[in-house]
Image 1: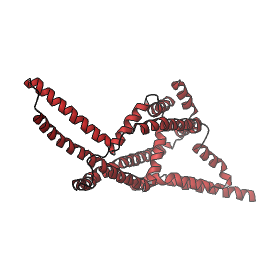
Image 2 (image 1 turned 180 degrees about the vertical axis):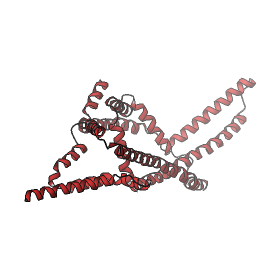
Image 3 (image 1 turned 45 degrees about the vertical axis):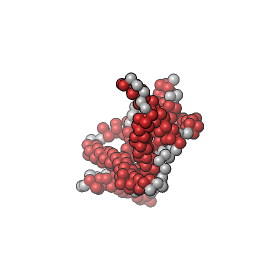
Image 4 (image 1 turned 60 degrees about the vertical axis):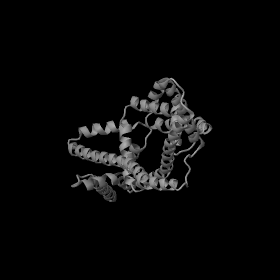
Length: 329
């Protein structure tokens, strides 16, 4: 009799847990409730699984196996799909899953757009309306030099020297005589004033870029710090996309990424990128620093790629690793 009562209590606990989980996934009456359910479903479900009694160890083991397993997740997805297809009451569940997937996709895409637009607008607006006017004012008061580094001076002198040779050549070709020294000096003076304004604008732009980019990073960090729930939804969305790819597609993406960032020809891309960054901030192009970065950072990045493939991808999708090795060979 005691045993029967104990079994009845266990059955009641299991039924109460099932009702609690199923009620959480009922259709929501508004978009706000649906989004809130998407953001809290995973964390609440894990908490409920931890509260299960020992008699529900089979259910808990299935949950944990689905979360982390040595087998590919596609096997479990296929098994769940077959069971769902055989369930006569699966239509409502399919509609509910579609609604949740739609809401998850909307939240993830909206968050990605927000991450891109907010820092970009912050950088452009702060540079145009705040930092550029301040730097222009300081430069007009002769508190900022025209040239930020020696390379700008060398470029200006090369342009003036080239301009002097060009006007002499054009004068000789068009009029058949060499120009006088006074004509050359007047032309060089006008060109020098024009180049001075141009390099002043470059210096102002470079200094304003520094402060505007700092403001952009602060705005990006602020968005990330206040969007923890959206980050979880975005991670779930990306996991669903990545794990839904075929093994050949996964291998192709890995090979493309590694060849771009750590491949044989990636050094030229890194060199162009670093030169552009230095020019963006008005810094001199230090070739030794650029070559040192190229000699170390891609090697570290390559080691990280290989460790990730060996440590995680080989457990999650061994077939994708095998396909990657076959394609890479």
